[in-house]
Length: 305
Image (cartoon, rainbow, N blue to C red):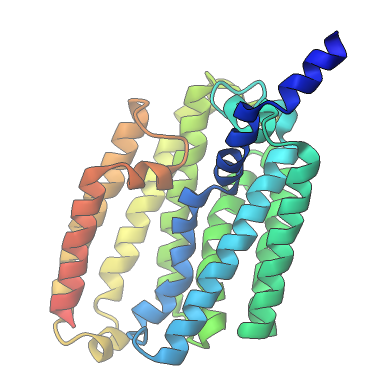
């Protein structure tokens, strides 16, 4: 009777209907917004309107979406035991058993393989190499590096930078040291927000990680300082010679500094009140003021060109 009952549960229509939704959830479609970073080099160089550059950027974006989804699924497979102890992650499709582990492994492999093949054939082997680097670092993070305090946060920030570099490789657009410095500080701040809010959620102890109760006390100081350093780099960059070649009214770019300062401060303020999702990207997507600030920033960029 028990075996028959289990069989009925496994093949019930409700579960079958839930599996497409479970797959979409495991693919983390909402996280694809991070991969817009691969288009940033073309936008920053004011070359996004060039057909060849635009196509290469969009292909790179699509390939990173595939690779990222494959990595997310692989991470869920490796973290299934810890996720089942997490108050929020235990409801994920793989941890809850809705999406079988065997099927998840196949889907992950298909996503990553597709990203590598398409990037190689449609753009260049160098883009495929950048995607392979992203996948390798992500797997190393899931397998080991996430258990190393501080190292894990720097790896998360580095994965953001890899996306930007991949966009530069795909379009053959050089990245300035100014932009890399700005990206490093900003993404490090966002990575600390993610870890800080996770520590809050788990009451100071993360299963399978190297953090303990009390570690959340020093994270805001580093995270906020790193975010402010990004704004400082932006302020200094406005006076750089290359800015005058790209913008007719570079002085207007200075208005971006208080906007970014406000956004970073508000993000950490909300994080300190436990009002932020453990992923700052998800928080930005559901935060109306972020959309308003982003629209104002785009207007400033348009007026400065």
